[in-house]
Length: 311
Image (tube, rainbow, N blue to C red; front, top):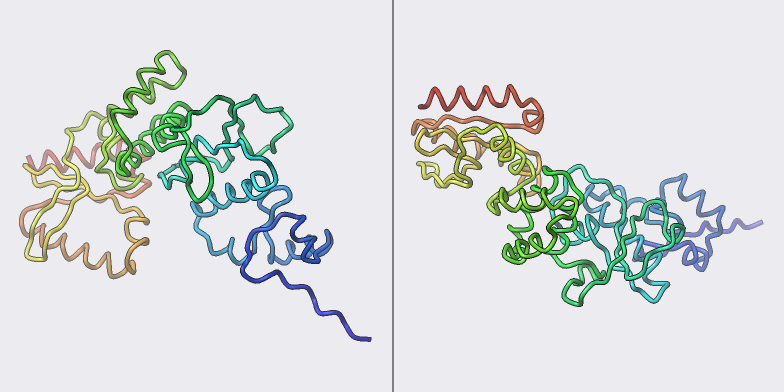
């Protein structure tokens, strides 16, 4: 008796609805077996992704993949009418988000039924103007400015500042954001929006730098300059934060600063080489890691000691 060759997932496709897998010859038992083996990963009810693709994705890519899974399971089988908004739109715009869950946020014109969406979906209802909707990754989502405002009304002040810094760096219209803020007077969360508009700085290059600046502001420490260029015999070196007159520099050593561009060892070697050249010019360095941002008294003491010694 000849054994039937096991079915293989179609090549070139990585995301499937249950019905698509059924059409390819996979019944419920076969799908469950492939999930147990890790060949498929269930992203949400009725939607699966190829296991090796999911395993190789970074966390922020996985967050966008969950939005794509929702779209694959809903927008492609309906007449549309859903617009991705709030933190889901922020993910589609590639904005920095910190400590935010992966629930999918959608906005639609009519008030949704409480059972019309899954537990992983947060539905909002309002009318959107044509200018409020853009396409990102082929999916309809709120414009950059509206996305920022929606998020700031619901996130805490640290999360909102990280997002606002990055949005301004990506070209968000500050004047439009201010106008939208004024129009929302009295709304819940508008105080957070107003505060982060006041404190935002487009020169911040990472969530860690934003949180470092937020901590300096909150502790009322003398404010440094951001992204300061200093020339040395080893070339030009840009500092995350600098008290130029006192020659005190502060650098945030976050993983993304090194891991996204060049081999880590090479980048750190170059960094330390430039730091040595600057030390010879009289500069003092304070290096900050993620954990330092949550040990506020120790952080404050380190910075004040360095500024006092240099002063």
